Each structure stands twice: as C-alpha cells, then as structure tokens.
Amino acid sequence: MPDEYTDENPALGSLYAEHIAAVAERHDHALEQAGASHAVVYSGNPKIAFLDDYQLPFKPNPHFLSWVPLANLPFSYIVYTPGETPILIYYQPHDYWHVVPGAPAGYWTNQFDIRVVHSTDDIAQHLPTARDKCIVIGEIEDDASTFGIERVNPTTAVNILHYARGVKTQYELATMRLASQRGVVGHAAAKAAFRDGLSEFEIHRAYCKASSHTEPELPYSNIVALNEHGSVLHYTNLDRQAPAESRSFLIDAGAIVHGYASDITRTYSRSDSRFQDLIDSMDAMQLDIVNRVQAGVDFRDLHISTHKMLAGILVDAGLATGSPDTLLETGVTSAFFPHGLGHLLGIQVHDVGGFMEGESGTTIDPPSGHPFLRLTRELEENMVLTIEPGLYAIDMLLENLRGAPAENHVNWDAVDWLRPFGGIRIEDNVRVLVNGRENLTRDAFAQL
Ligand SMILES: [Mn+2]
Image (tube, rainbow, N blue to C red; front, side, top):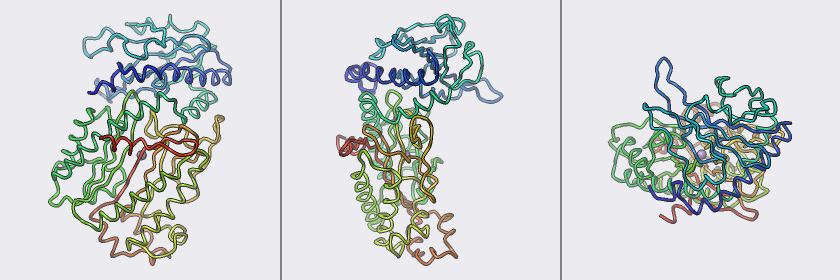
C-alpha cells in the first residue's frame, strides 16, 4: 500500500491541527447550545452474529472518525472539554483471540492526551466526574458503555455537528483526494478486466486487489454489473460466470483513506457504437452539470435541470419524443433516471446533513415527484458532493408509463435496443468552490 494511505503521511499531519481546531469549535458550539460541558464520543462496539459468537465487520461511529482516523478501535472514547486538549481513551485489550490495536502512532497523535487502557474497567476513571455535565455521542446498545451519562445523542448537539460536517476542512479534502486516487486505481484495473472478458466476480476481485481493499473495508458494496445488470441500481450479485457476450459494464465502486470515502461510477461499451455514443452524450451532460456546481447553487434546481438535459439526450438517441418540459411532466425522464443527481460525501458515503436547512434541524424537502434526491441544501464552499446522472432501461418503471400520456412519448423499439446494455451512470466527486469547483474524480483519473 502506498505510504500516503498510512498514518505516516506528513502532508496530512500538517493539515490535521487545523482540522482538529475546526472539529473542536463545532463541539464548543454544540455543547453550549445543549447546555453541557463535556462531549464523550464513543467509537462503538462490534456487533455479534445472531445466535453465534463471531464479530460482524466493525463500523465505527462517524463522529468518532471525524476526530481521529482510527476506523478499527472499538470500545474507545474521545473526551472533549472546551479549551482543553481532547483526551483519547484508547482501548487496547489483552486478547489472544484477535489482533489488538497497536501502540498509538502517526500524524494524529500529538493532538490528543492519549490514555491507553487494557480493560473496560479502566475507562471510567478517565471520564469527567460530573456525568450530569456530559453528553454521549455514539451508537449506544448497552448502558454499560455510557458510564452513567444520561444524555445520549441530544438532538440539539447532533444537529449542529451534522450540519457542520457538510463543509470539509482542508485535511478532509486532502484525505478525499487520496480516496479518489485509490478508487481510480481500482477502476482502471476493473476496466481492464472487463476488456479481458472476465466475470463480474473476477472484475470485482481485480478492483479490490488494485485498490488494496478487503471487502469489509470498502465504503459500500461494489456494483459490478455486466449487460442487463446495469439497470439494477444497487446490483451486488457478482455472477461467477462471464456472460457469453459481454456487451457493457457499469461499475460503481469507491475507496477509503483515513475514514473518508470516494464514490465513483463509470460505464463502458465493449464494441457497440450506438451504446458508446449514448455513453459519450451522458458523459458530456455530466460534465456540463459539474460545471454548474458552485457556491450558492440550489441543488434541487440542478437536479431538475438535469432532467431537462436528459430529455434532450433521450430525444437525440431516439428513445423518446417531446419537449423537455413534456418529458419531465409526464414522468418519462424519471422512468429513465429514477434516482437523485447526487449526495454529500465524506466519512459516510451518503454523508449526513443533505436535507438540513440549518443547524437547528429543520429540513428542506426534495422537489415533488423526486423523492430520492438526498441533497436539497444550497451549495457552500468546500462541500463535497457527487454528480451522478443516469439513464437506464428499467422495465418495472417504464411499464408504469403504459396507458398514460407518457406512453406515446417513449419509443419502445429503442427501449428494446437499450435493454441488453442495462444502463449508464457516470459519477464524479466534486468540491464546491466560491466561483467554481474541483473535480476530485477527473483529476485522479488524469493523474493515472
Ligand atoms: Mn453515489
């Protein structure tokens, strides 16, 4: 694994102090508004398989990860008191069944007062004695892990933290650039495996090997879809056999560096020039949308604009007839493109706060008729979001248009042509600037 993905990355170290200052500041505000003096952020605990004794892959509390890039440190805590160095209660059990966390090391260590504990019995002594002045933030399944703190995830504080996480620090942007770079290495290997005619399973393995990810480490389950499977939005089956004719390939796969994700989709045609032309049209449209990203844009408007642009592509490709407004109003564009244009990205692939109007927790609804749009906020500098328009032959949705005015706007012969290719999605990760944007994904592909 390249050095820049490890804890010894000096470039990240130089940005980390400023990141911690920003995280501390948002906690200062959250504590003040919640009327509390200390935030106790729990990393979480591994879940145990039902009726068995083995641990499922550990998914840490994202609030813990926002403090410290330790994705594999269960039963640990950050204790933050405004004006003081945050305490990291670092749980290093005596355990011969599992690999235990090593000694704390890396660029992040000098920002914390680190207390290594070897037993959960030793945690309480490092917590503030005035438990009634504390709030706990984390997934609490067992009262034993709160050590008598009664205020768990108070809404006022959590809303403030979620809203703030929508805007990234320079440190977070640096980790996300690395996550994009790690992802495109996997994408290049997957594309080559598709060109070699391999199965979905083998393409997936090529992706994991090239990006140096185990499956549980991936930010989400890879979508590796050949042919018709590209029309299943969350296709994760991974056929073991290569199809007799491997026509098209849709891959939606990301990577993680220091707890931050990339989320990247590409679509390829093996040899069909008509399908390639449609991919090229979608690619040009996607870039056009990306070029509209900047601070102050209402993402709901961008989503609706995408539908109108998509209508033009449907007409040009012979899939539909009618004006953009007609195709939008009759539901034709939504049948071909039934998901949202994009979402916030960060520690969580679908990062929190996409619907938030402000830190108080009031939300902004998606436009009527577009319930799956996950980002309704006005764009702000240093948000990172995905731009991922799609076009699919989804029979279940297209058949719903039968008997409605929309039916006559669809060219059903062309749908029959498209069906064996599944669909197209092109997804980049984009940072919002005051007067423009940074395309993390295209930059990473260009550096390959
Ligand atoms: Mn996405």
